[in-house]
Amino acid sequence: MLLLTYSTAVICAVFIATGAVSGEVKIKPVGDTVSFRPTNIKSPVTSIIWKHRSSSVVTKAIEWDDDGLNIPNPRFKGITTLDEKTGQITITNLTVEHSGVYTIDINSKEQEQRFTLEVQERVSKPVIVKEESSNPDVVYLRCGDSEEIIWKNSTGQVLEGKKNHKPGKFIMVENTKNPQNFYTCTLKNDVSEETSRVYERDLFKTESNGGQIVGIVIGVLILALLIMSFLYAFVKSVHVVVPLKSENADTENASPSDEKQQKG
Ligand SMILES: *[C@@H]1O[C@H](CO)[C@@H](O)[C@H](O)[C@H]1NC(C)=O
Ligand SMILES: *[C@@H]1O[C@H](CO)[C@@H](O)[C@H](O)[C@H]1NC(C)=O
Image (cartoon, rainbow, N blue to C red; front, side, top):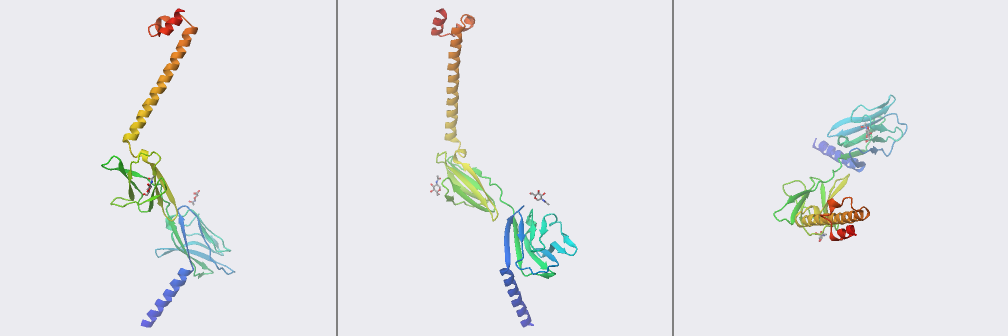
């Protein structure tokens, strides 16, 4: 009895080992397409059944025989095709529920080959959240959740993101007063990656923004001055061409030179 149990274990181990050796693993993003194809298929082929195993539930993905093609499970309907000659299955519009192990029966005999599919959601565009500190020239930037998180600065150097009780990883950023400086956060998984960037100048208000406002105000003032002097020159030339008409209204504000011209 003990010997029997032992030999069963050995057979199982050998079976699992060979299964692992002949296994094929594909990782795909949601919405993508996957194809699996058995390596040796001997004609004549009279029937094919592809089966999907996920947490010990076995479903038929697609079957083909004398009666034609059949896709009994709604999870595979409309998105699954089969090449009867090569045995290749193709599934489009993948969802996470298509993850699992696929096996193929040819002429009602299950083949040894295993095909493992893992479907993952793509990472979303990272959102960089700023947290103020007691120092106005220091802020904390936080990004990500449970996926791989990579923080970098403008020079492309990787910065060590730290963890605390909140999700994601954070870095400490000091105000270097260099408007070119920026920080990027990249989220990454097996099927995708996305990066967001934030400029240092958008993180610190105080001086640089004050400077910007002063700059804008000065710019507006200069523009107003230019427009006024242009208008003044224009009005002056009108006065020269059309004398007397609006004289009464304008004499009060007119400059001495104006008066001279009008008199002469
Ligand atoms: C599969 O995806 C394509 C493009 O994304 C879409 O047009 C089509 O309707 C989808 N088919 C099914 C059965 O969901
Ligand atoms: C980028 O990070 C590296 C490593 O922390 C640092 O030595 C370098 O000064 C940083 N450069 C900028 C422009 O922030």
